[in-house]
Length: 156
Image 1 (cartoon, one colour):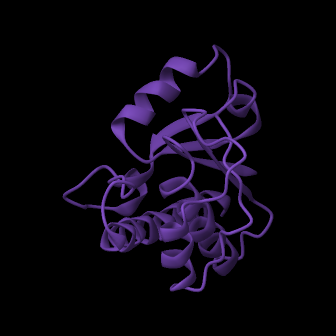
Image 2 (cartoon, helix red, strand yellow; image 1 turned 90 degrees about the vertical axis):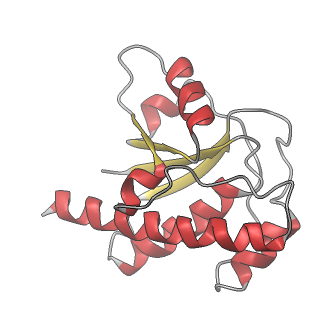
């Protein structure tokens, strides 16, 4: 296991927050060699920073995502990354459509790693208030810890 890509629609809310949280969870688990990145299935915000509300919510949890810049998923990502994790079903379906034959990436729903939650998607907080970013981060933190534990267990 060498790399993880976190994916949402525009790459300005959920996936940048997830990248920051996953990075911290991996570091805390001693998995500092694993690289992380985030991307969107759309190209609407390519080159732009994360949503200011996402930056603020992440900073409230001591995670700095300000320097990240949005990018769109590319075919090469399916060969570069070991795990590609989608925040919701629509982006999961889009990733499966984009995935080239014989690629090595394993595409997952991100919340698969969160255990037995009653939800399977990280809701998009973009059109809501700041509390939506906090709720998304709560779910992301659960999945990030589960993902780090999954990788650590496989490494043993």
